[in-house]
Image 1: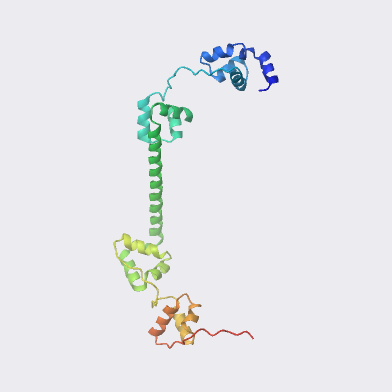
Image 2: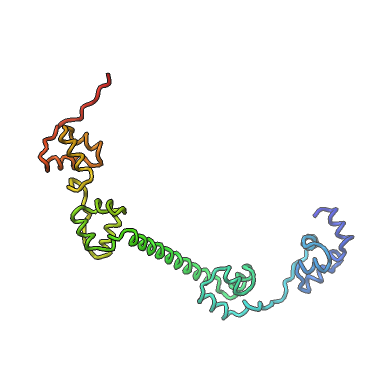
Length: 248
C-alpha cells in the first residue's frame, strides 16, 4: 500500500487507525469479521496491521463440533484408513483443519502410515485383479490351455513353439499352463523338428541343388535345421559358400 492509499484509508476508514482495529483483534475478531464490520477489504485490514505493528490475536480454543472427539477420530482412522478427502467429508471441514487436529491429537504420523498401508493394499488388489482377468481371457480364448493332459501330449509330439503357433498364443503361455497344472515339461525347440511348417519347402529346395545357407535366407529356419532335414531324407548337400551373382 502506497502513501496515497494509506491517506485514503485514514479518511475513509478511520477505525483502521484510531485504535478500533486493535480492540477488535484483542476481542478475537478475524480479518474477515473486521473487514465486514468496518466495511473495507481484507487486504486493507492486513496492511493496517502491518503498518502499525499489531499482532494478530487468535480466538480462544474453540472445540470443533466433530473433530474435537479424539476417540471418534482415532476409531475412524484405524477402521477406514481414510484419505484427506474422506476425512474432510466425514468431519465436514477443510484439509487444513483436519491436519491441525490430527497434529493436536498426535495422530498425524499414524495417519500417514495408515495411508501408505492403504495405498499398498490397493496396488496389490489391482495387480491381482489384472492377473485374474488376464488368466480368464486366456482360458476363454485358448481352450487347449485348460486341458493340461492334451496340451502335454501336443507339446511332447510337436514342441511348445509349434503348439503355441497353432493355438495363437505365446510359447510362455503354453509353458505356464503346464506349470499351473503341475506338469513338468521342457520347452521343445523347433531345431530339426519334423513338423516344422517350412520343412517341405526346404526339402524341395535341397533337391533342387541349393545349400542350407541359401535356403535359410528363404525359409524361417536355421541352416543347422535344414542340414538335419537333408540328412533325414538322405539328400546330398552342396558344400561351400553361396555363389555370388556378377552383374553384367
